Each structure stands twice: as structure tokens, then as C-alpha cells.
Image (cartoon, rainbow, N blue to C red; front, top):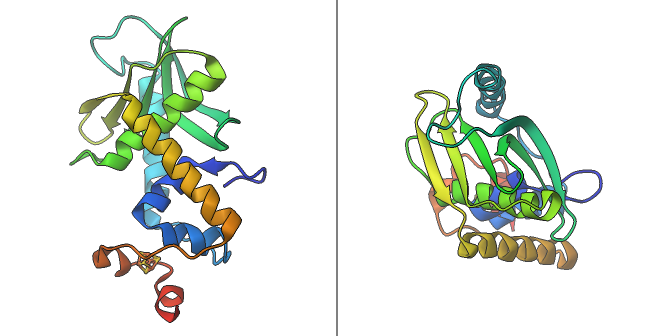
Length: 192
Ligand code: SF4
């Protein structure tokens, strides 16, 4: 969440991972860990940005304008997005999310792109038929159709997050106990 109270896509991903992580961070203000893995990811992003300025990012698309590191705010749904690369023309836009490695496509990857699509449509007024995830390690690309159901899931999640913030109600813990093993909030969580 930024200083103006806009939620970030990372917040949405964290909330889906475990709503309690979000609660500990923003309601109890228990802090948030930035892991060395996250730091490495940022460095890799910079590297691919430099390379991609000169190369074609997604083969098969018509010639499009490319912009990197775009920040957009959805005032309607109170969240912001940082788009690694946005390719666009007058009518259509295609967000590209770079990942250090992509061995498997998870649902949260699709939701990240869907959140970006919502913000693009609201702020830039362009249609977003597809988004892309590109692996930095091997250059593989996954095309994701921006279905209404995906965008509805983003909005539903954001509404749920806002409810937690306003009501300050402790959400139920994740049902996947494997997630708790390395959780930064493990100590707080076990005391509740
Ligand atoms: S310890 Fe488990 S339930 Fe608690 S915040 Fe962490 S992931 Fe969620």
C-alpha cells in the first residue's frame, strides 16, 4: 500500500497467498520482510528492460509502442500497478510481466495481469485482450487471455481486502500449512 492508501498488486498477491499476512502487515503494522530473492528479482528486471528496449519482446504481434516501468492508479478500485512493459497502439494495450523464471503458470500470475488490465482500461482507455508473462531465464512467453472472470476475481479480492482494513477483523489462516513454515508472521500468528 502506498502513502495515499492505494493497494498494490503485491498486496493482492499476498492476500491471496494468505489473508492473514495482509492483516499483520497493514492492520497490526507488524512489518514486512523483503527477501534476498525479491532483491535478485528486481536486478533481473532491470537487465531484461535494457535488452528488451532493443529487441522484440513478443513475436507475432504487430508493431507497437513499448514503454517500461509504467505506474498507473485505479481510482475506481483504489489500487496501483507497476507494469514491467506496456506495448500499445491507439486502441489496444498488452501488458508484459517479466519473471526471473517461470516453471509453472500460477493463478496469481493471471490475476496480476488482470489487475494491470483493469488499471489500463480505466486510466488509458485502451482495450486489453491479452497480457503476457515472459521468463527472463529462458525467454519463454505465456499468453493470458484477459477474461471478465479474472478481472471480477481481482475486484472481489480488493473488496475483501478493504473490508479487512476497515473492520480490522482477523482473517482465517491459510488452509495450506506448508505456507506457514517460512512465514515472517509465524510467531504472531501462533499466539492468536
Ligand atoms: S503463519 Fe500461516 S496462517 Fe499465519 S500469516 Fe503466515 S501463512 Fe498465514
